[in-house]
Amino acid sequence: MADNSDVSVNNYIFDFYNQTEAIFENDISDDLLEKIKNRNINISIISPEADSITGYQKMLSDSTGGITIGNSGDSGYKRLYQHVYDKKVVDQSFRAILITGYQPI
Image (cartoon, rainbow, N blue to C red; front, side):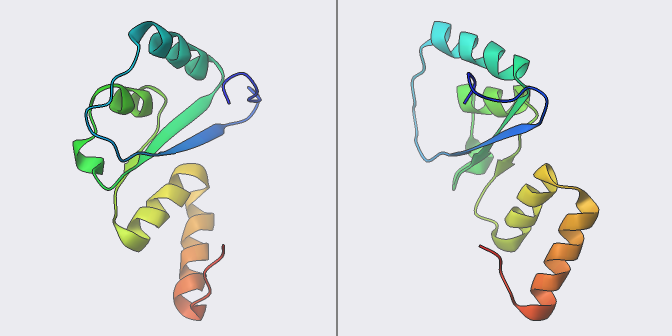
């Protein structure tokens, strides 16, 4: 992703993360983080353990302007959409879902 992203637009990575005691190679991870920040890539974490994410995963998310989302149902999805899209568009979309019950794929 870092090598092929378009720096003229916002790029988003959503990392589905469910691992404890992960080990990262510091030299590789530092180089990757610099490349990601220079390529306008935003990394967010989606995890059942969102409140306890630490270390490299937390640093990736925090350093790139990402967010961390747990298992919070519709409010988590809304927060995810608000992170990527304009707030007004998100609010209108979620209002339509509540009224019609339609859920886009």
